[in-house]
Image 1 (tube, rainbow, N blue to C red):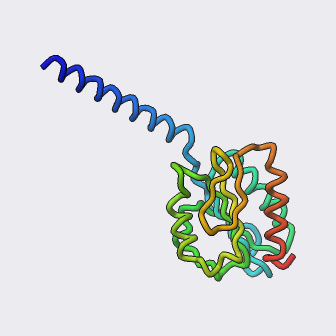
Image 2 (image 1 turned 90 degrees about the vertical axis):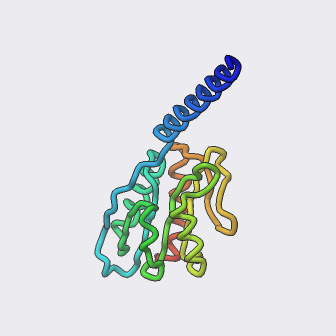
Amino acid sequence: MKNIRKILLVLLSIALVFLVFMFWYQNEYAMDHVQEYEVNSPRENSKLLLATQGSEFKNAITTSIVDYYKTKSVYIKVMDVSALVGVNPSNYDALLLIHSWENWKPPSAVKSFMDRTMNYRDKMVVLTTSGKGSYKMEGVDAFTGESILDETPMYVGEIIEKLNPLLKL
C-alpha cells in the first residue's frame, strides 16, 4: 500500500510540475491580442488587410508596413488573426497575414481562413514565425523566420516588394 501511495504521489507531482510549466509557457510565449484599427479612407484606390498577432517583432513589422503605406493611396485595416473568420478576401486587393507557429501548428483561425480562401492565395502575403524559423503551412507560399528584431527591415522590404504589385503601386 505504501508503494502505491509513493507512485501516486510521484505521478501527481509530475502532473503538477507539468501544469505549472504549461501555465508559465503560455504566459511567457502567448501572443498578445491586436487592437483593430484603420488607416486612410475605405474609398482609396487600393485596400490592404493586415491580420497579425501581437509581439514585439510582429508589432515592429506591422508599424513599418503601416508607416510605408499610410502616405500612399491605400486603405489599411489592421486586425488580430482571430478576427479572420469574418473576413471576405474579395473586399481587399492584398492580404498580409503575420502569425506564429504555436504548438507545432498555425493558429486555428489562420488555418481555417487559409483553407476557406484557397482561391485568393494569389492576393496573400504570409509571414510565419517559429522557434526554428522554418515552419509554414503546407501549400502556402510564405516567408518564414524567427522573431529577431534586427531582421525586421529585411522582412519589411520583402513584404513590401510582394505587396506593391498587388496594390498596384
